[in-house]
Image 1 (cartoon, one colour):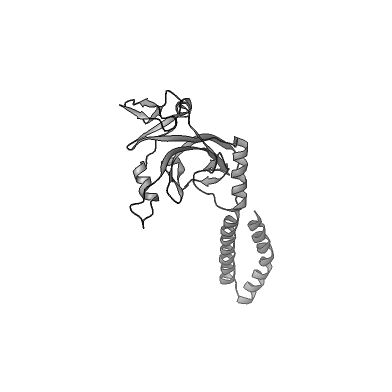
Image 2: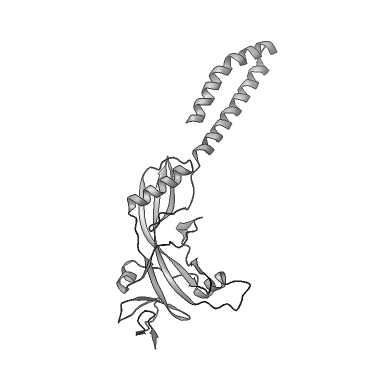
Length: 244
């Protein structure tokens, strides 16, 4: 049994236990789905590792998070279903690998080109976990249960997985290699939040210390005098602490 190529219409022989086929006539990569073959496209990366790191750094600084330390890079291609309905085009992330964590990447807006057979092999594109029928149900207009889609394609989009460090802690983020959009898998504590927490701890310590001075002083008057004398260095330490 053969399937029709979505690009040139040629007959593509089915290979057992495979998700991707290569048209022998136009070398286009095709994905085998229950409904038949689906066009397989790719978005090419436009950012190098340095530019991706700059996007991540800007994202963190905008959120009052200090500049990261060391970087580690890895490129992956995430699968998306892109479905054209009569009045709209919608995309669904077709796989959610564990590395994504809390991140929910969106399909980049970059131009798509048909994936070639050699690219499908060399880039090790992963097959979608969410099947097309599920993606159709997720994007179909619920008020029109009989709505028919016009076309569907499987799109693989490039993302950098960037591992970085802040202090002694390690974090990671997905950076869209076509647009520079950043999707943190976990987010470090912002500098403002850390400063607020440190200030609250120091203020609590000052109150506790002042209480001990007053309680154990021979008289209330002597305790208040001691507290007044200590207020200057304690205030200095407090202000010094929240600036760090």
